[in-house]
Length: 290
Length: 258
Image (cartoon, rainbow over all chains, first blue to last red; front, side, top):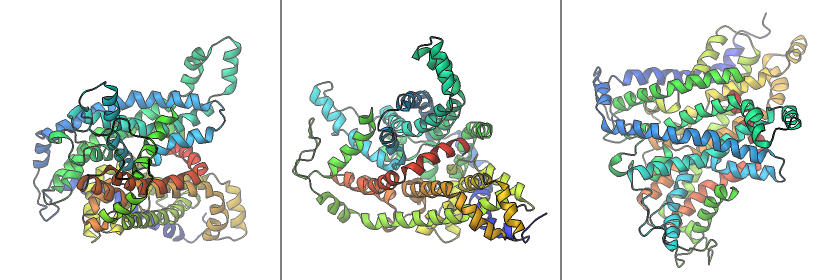
């Protein structure tokens, strides 16, 4: 039994449905199609079979990018799963000015990654505050090449990502901590459990699912890193372009006269393959939580 | 610990206010500018058209906010409160898109925008995000939370679907709607990768792309870059500080359901 004209729902969903097909469904199909062509930003577009995928297997820069992604993920994962939880526990106590603390921790999250990377780029510059101060202290004689060394650049981008992400995950933990029942804590305290014991036996089991959710969120976003590395390396991808991320490579091949949209699409499929596992896990966790 | 999150921003603000005479490269620079000056802000505007970049970012953000406020609300209402053929299939497709990181389709997205003749335009930047699939689902969740008795009573009184959307739906989803619009604004304002791909003419850049252009092409003076960063950063902080109560509710709800 319906109480509206048959076309009313369609009028309402029409714009969103058009967007769904034009900017989600069709691009997904087209990515696969393009991956089998030599489409260029200026012309091209002939079927070339598996040529792009053969090139994928043989691409040293892609191999570097995958190594970078794995390192990025392995370092970010423990840091961004554990640190925000500890901060959330500290902040959760009803301190005066809690709203202020929350806002302060969240500021790096709302700032654009470009803004954050420019700020850190200046801090970590050869002549920036960190190097200048360390030299003044006499800890180092020469500036540390944070932004020009293949591995230091990657780790600079990682620390920036961790710094920017702390507030975001802390807020998620805060809402999870709010759901851990207070009576459990009180009962445990009555039974003589100290703060450390209560953390392991009450808090941790209470936020287990949230930790799982956050570790998946962290993994996915680590695999998608772009702006931080791009801006810190000034678009070059570091010395010899060895600090490219997967998304940086996709961007590199999708613009300009040297671009190759077909190959960029094949790289997009590589990105899909490496993220699909964590993404599906995320969807499952969400469904459980909802 | 608080120092750790806030001080880099303050340091950048301080750098942006330091005059050319002040040495910013010493090992012991002063935290406060010795002779605070706004001249870096004027000078950055002479190097790159920073104010028109800011206007471009604002135009993109306005389109994205308006598109999501209208499009996601309408679709969310239909999916939550009206029964029609194909609703389940449509909902499934909306959900399925969440598994796909946006970067995976960004190349073919660009091909689409280009074939619409919108390459290197602000409309091309704004269009794909003008109705976010996640926002449709968030609005649907909000509309679902309204008790169905309210709808039934309105139907008995002869209210049309549009009247129910206007008088029962909207007043009850204001919270989620504000969350969706705030996130849409911040997302559009902060976005970098997509405008970087779409825009090629430096006259058309948005603020984030323009800042990287400033950094990459005229990188001589950190004071100017600092001033540019602040022009991008301060508006978002003001929006955020003013609306932070809605914001945190949104993060809490969105993180679990999103």
